Image 1 (cartoon, rainbow, N blue to C red):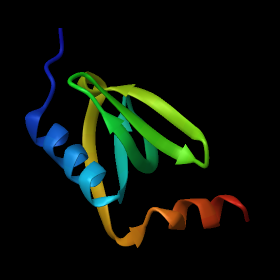
Image 2 (image 1 turned 120 degrees about the vertical axis):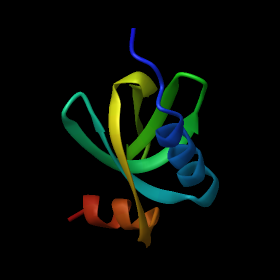
Image 3 (image 1 turned 135 degrees about the vertical axis):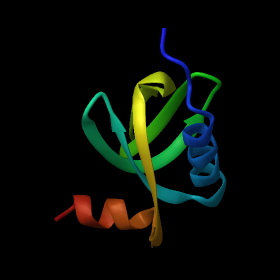
Image 4 (image 1 turned 180 degrees about the vertical axis):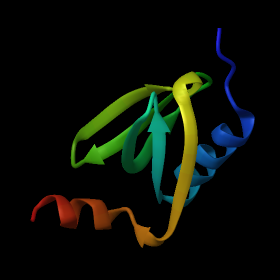
Length: 80
């Protein structure tokens, strides 16, 4: 059974608290969005307005926080 990486969980918690855009890699697939909610074992990543993806923390191998992009950057770009 895979273990949850505490540094990855801390980064996602920081993204949630600061409304930052985050990019993560889950099972070799890249997702970019906002952290809508984080539990002990799962992150809910907002990919577009009204659409969240449930992602188990155990499958996340990398997280990058985007300091220069606010959350609305995602929604403005998704309309184009």
